[in-house]
Amino acid sequence: MTLRQHITTLVAVFAALAVGIVLGGGLLSDVTEAASTETSAPVAEAAPQAAYTESFTGAVAPALVAGRLTDRQVALVTVPGADEQVVTGLTERIAAAGGAVSARYDLTETMVGPDQKTLVDTLGSQLMTQQGDAVAPESTTYDRIGQLLGLAAATSVPEGEATNGKGRAILESLTGADLVTAPADVERRAPLVLLVLGDDPSPEGGDAILAGLVTGLDRAATGVVVVGDTADGGEGQLGRLRAEPVSAEVATVDGVETTAGQVTTVIALARAIETPGGSFGASGADGPLPLG
Image (cartoon, rainbow, N blue to C red; front, side, top):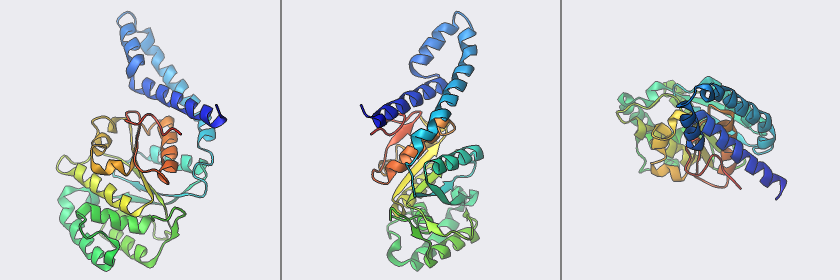
């Protein structure tokens, strides 16, 4: 077995261990539950075990992500309510992997609020007309606005590209309409997009809005990774996104509040340059992290 295979196996082991401890799932859950009927001591030991796992993961993380995103840029998109500590952690992991965040784009409540659909649709239609055939004519409201944001922030060129006049004009319109908050001096469009989830979507069409935005971003970028915390997996918003057709084209990672989840995110970003899709993390159907 090669060193890389050893490392990959190690990652899988510690990620699974971290998930098991944090969630209390699987075999660990059964053992803890059985023991708790006799004494509370094993429950008291869970916190030190979780702390050890997180500490161990943090210690090996630099070696695991080093060089995976060398000279790659990532456009960071956040949904309202995204955890700033998670965003900071992900930014640092991207840098540790040799990459860089090209710019941060914060979606606003206006963008994701179902009651603002008319505004989003009207502006999207106007901008689509200005962009000619750059936006798919059959696009729905949020698919279209996602494509437009993608044209400003991302590119299908793996090496990335400089921001152009059209991209700047789109971004000015989106920020002017209070749909997105972004820097005024964006210089590069990134091949990779990392979308960090936040508050649960509105029950009145919020899931469809998220799926549309992700679909649009994916049309413009080389690769897209959508991440959320452990609660977002399973039946949460990330779990529901995984049931949408776009999940075959974008990677998803839950458990990103942990170091293991952030390491998995970096590996998923590197994978997304060549391979679309994949469900990873605490409840990912394809395992705790991409292997191979």
